[in-house]
Length: 542
Image 1 (cartoon, one colour):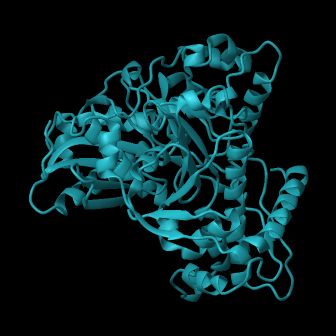
Image 2 (cartoon, rainbow, N blue to C red):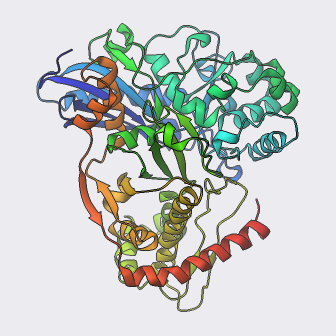
Image 3 (cartoon, one colour):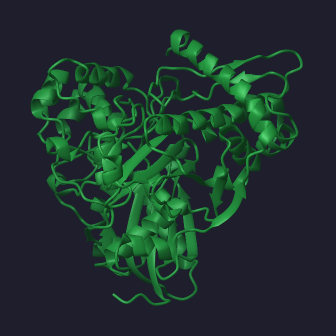
């Protein structure tokens, strides 16, 4: 295909609260138009129980919001763009059970209101016990160490822990599920008319980082291991899948039904899906040993490196290292923080209690940010841990809890807010230190996402704490742009993923340079953060 100025692709980015559809010009990556639609049931708080850390999303939310977002994006274009391909990224690990025909179980009669039949969102932590049992089994002598490529620690946020939890707690759903698929695999299957659970194309990204798929053992953990973990898993049809594909490949062609809903041509290729952070890194132009930080409700940190340079190096305590999970031909590394933007949203919610009854409106965060930015590092002695949603990396543990210390009568809302900002930066520094201490250098840090672009305070504190420049990309839609890059590759609009990335990546908008005096102050405060973390690990477990 020879791409022209009217050759466009569609990037679909399924976030935690909404889906974004972006029409991107294939020749240069220009974002022509976009649409955003929230998940209606999710926004009402249905099927969730935050007190027990249960977060479920109904697949009908994805279908309805996707149509609205795509139609808005197409309507926002001047004229009729030629759409030649679709790329999809989603949150993860966010698995859902499917029926024999590949349809989400929650769309079937008898399961439409059962939370266990829905997508188990990445932030759902109802499976901490199951994750601990996976870790214990892999540590036993003579047992295959299936977690060696996911940092040596399995998380309750991931695929097998969630499946096992449902298997133990809801036999009706478990028996009815013909298979379990990640959201990033379900959406392409939906759009391409997959009519059998066994035909769903599996993403290398999701399978390798969350489902323990790896070439070293020929795919997924074997049946003996699953049964030893819990006999209930012996009821699964194993293996659930064998093959995986990288996201530059075609998952299938858009069906006439979905083309009609979107208002675009049918028969165009839909690329293999992947997680939002992985595609966001590509949208930001990731290169070997640059760490791309997706700064949203949580953070996800992505790095790639040539396999011949990685060799046998294993980085302990991260979210995995998988060949081809980010870019074909590279080892993709993933790390991150279980809460980042959620930390600040929680603090605002705490301060806002009762405001609606008093008639108060508007966000408190801009004012907090302004006042906190005027304070010195460490403010008035307040210290905090960022683990409000557990710890993702280094060393996943969803049972740990956050802390705020050093409070006194002189503490203010802005000084506590600054302590929380500093805590998230310290968590970021711990991730970089883990990579480098285990042999993987971090040569550049690139930040994407709304927080990176909107909060100069957070970006500057990260630069000061880590003593590194933070390069913030221009695009608000880096994840959708990454999905579009893969769509253009799958459609043949570029000669390979490297060419597509070079043509369509988002440029850097601004760079934050570390302040030497602030960094010196943060050295001592970082030691306080580590001491708080050690105390929480020993004494504060959920």
